[in-house]
Image (cartoon, rainbow, N blue to C red; front, side, top):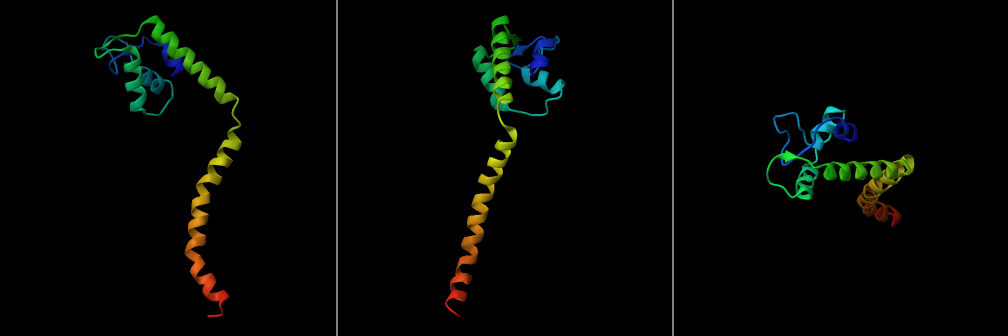
Length: 114
């Protein structure tokens, strides 16, 4: 998205303006981003306080660029390997509990000698 908003005219209120201007999400898509966040598009238009199609102001684009740069800087400080391991642990935990609960009646019957 950062590359896209730096190289294309940015619009608010629509996907494109028909004159070369594009929204930040389309800018990201054209530069390799393959995500779709409707919530971002709504937030972008809300930030710009518009319900019509228009070019984004210099201030709006600069604000978005600064937020993207800050987000990338914060991401660079994140230990991605640890975050993935933590996610996998949290995801596996309910599955382990469910398995143990499912097997619990058999274990108690076996322990009782039945």
